[in-house]
Length: 245
Length: 78
Image 1 (cartoon, chains in turn green, brown):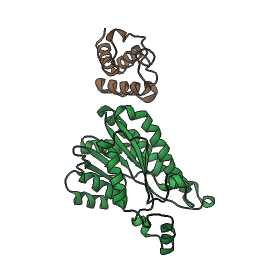
Image 2 (tube, each protein chain N blue to C red; image 1 turned 30 degrees about the horizontal axis):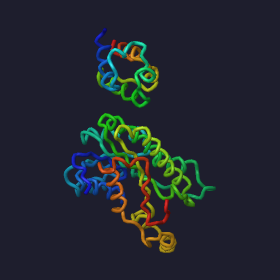
Image 3 (cartoon, rainbow over the protein chains, first blue to last red; image 1 turned 90 degrees about the vertical axis):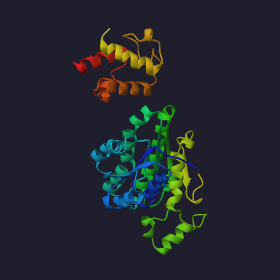
Image 4 (cartoon, each protein chain N blue to C red; image 1 turned 45 degrees about the horizontal axis):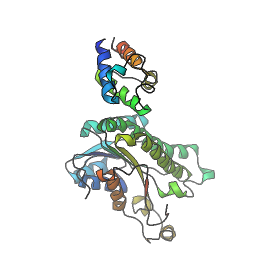
């Protein structure tokens, strides 16, 4: 239903479970995709799987000089940049009373500041084109909070406020800025949880199961599509009913 | 009028959709020519491309009028 033929998309964190699936789905809709991530190997593997219209653009998002260079590299590789998906994120969980400044800062740097810098870096081309889509991946914990994740929740809530502010500024230029807030999604990150942790999580999810990366990718595809041109500044919660916001 | 001024005027007229006669030296983009703050950012972007120059953010903030723009670009090109 959603056609992205001729569009170009940069996806950060494309080496991860959710980011990889977002890349597959946007590519499947016809987009040319730039796959960014810290680890080159899984990006190369994904590019090989996708075949044509896939470019590997490694970037360490904690290296701000590299972050500043990424939009330009993406445009050089793909010719333009119509869609930005800020999906990459890290966790450094700790109880608030034990959280070090470094644990706080590194999560803010990658999850919030790098997102800001990439949004800023892609705006010029989008403003000129009078078309653009920015989809920032937040998290349910940005809205609800989560013990042990003061840093992560702050960054993810920050992403929502930032997205709304930017959405105001560029709405008149045909650029939409939205967030997707996943709940618990089955990825390598959640595989590490033990059975007790998993059953405790399930008890909070009305749907009674974890989400699939494809269910996040579908939300991103919708927000990236021409059909979503009147949707901006919103947060699409994809969480099995865990938090009805 | 200089070549720079003519090229700047063309960009301003096209971008803001104003009459050429209103684009005078002391015409403020925001107060007189109806630009919003984002328009001024886009004008600076357009000047950068037209003249192949970089206008840093702090310099861009000083470009309030048509005359400011012409003056800045003439100096940058000199």
